[in-house]
Length: 203
Image (cartoon, rainbow, N blue to C red; front, side, top):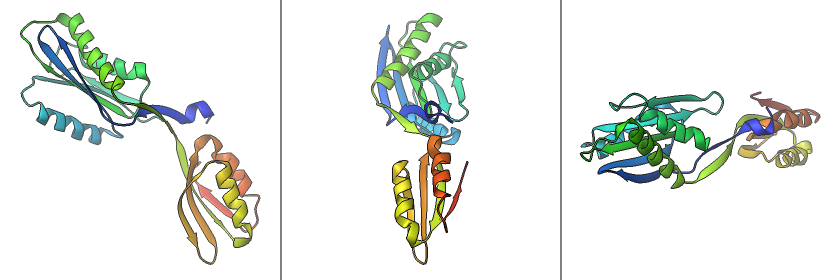
C-alpha cells in the first residue's frame, strides 16, 4: 500500500451546530465512530436528548479499508435529509464519522430544496466546529531476538517510527509493535537479516 493510501481523515472529537431557517431549528452532531453498533448507541442518546423532535436524520461513513456508508431521512422527503448529511461527510473526506441532524419544525414548510440546504449546512457547521485529523493505517507485529541483536532491533523500530505496545525482557527479548502499513514490509525485511531473530506480523 502506498503512502497516500495508508492515511485517512477523521475527526478528533464531537462537533455540534445549530442552524435556523424560517422558525425551524436544526441541531447538528458529528462524532467519531468505528462501527454500526457504536453509531446506533450515539443515535439513541441523541434521540433521548431530543425526544420531542420529529426527525432525527443521519448518515455515516465507516472503515477506511472498504468504506461503508448509510443515509437515513427519518420521515423527511426522500433524499432531502440523509443524503445531504452524507454529502457533507464526503466533501470533508472524513471516515469513521457519524452525523445526526435533529429538526424541530417551526411552522413554515421549507420545501425539498430548503431541507437539503438546512440539513447539509447543519452537518457542515458541526464538522467545522470540531477538528479534522489525519490517522495512519497500521499493522501489528511481534519480534523475538537475543540480547546480542537487541540494539539493532530497537534501531529498526525507531527508524520506521514503530510504536512499541509491549516489551518483555527475559531469556530473550520480545517486542509487540504497530507500524504504518506502507513501511511494514521494509521493516520485516531488515529484521529478518538478523540472526536468532524472528518476525511475526499481519501482512
